[in-house]
Length: 98
Image (tube, rainbow, N blue to C red; front, side, top):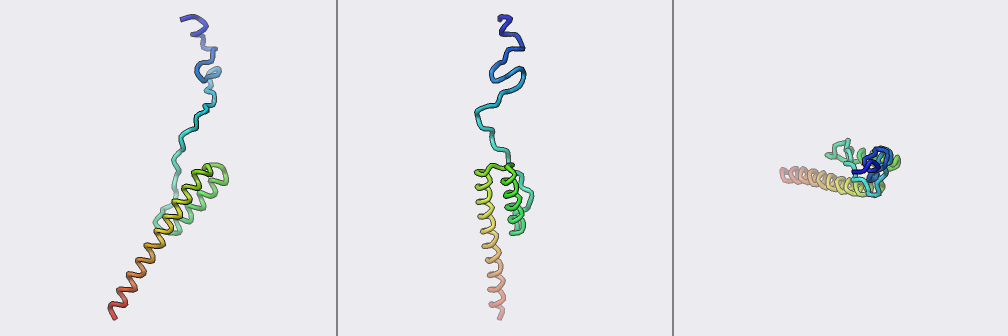
């Protein structure tokens, strides 16, 4: 090996004097941290509001946030449907007793 190649002052493979140069490859997405329980509409609403604020601050990319918001909408629909189903079952039990 020659002296010039072994010299630590020569940048190597994406390095510039010991610092890494920015990569052109996109970074893998960081996992989204959910803070609210999604077991009721109040939790879903709070999670959607939190997600919105994070998107506004640029902490969550718009593409990712939009997908998460869509999933949260679906969770809200399922919660609404299950609540209606529970209420209907209760009404049917009451009406059968009469």
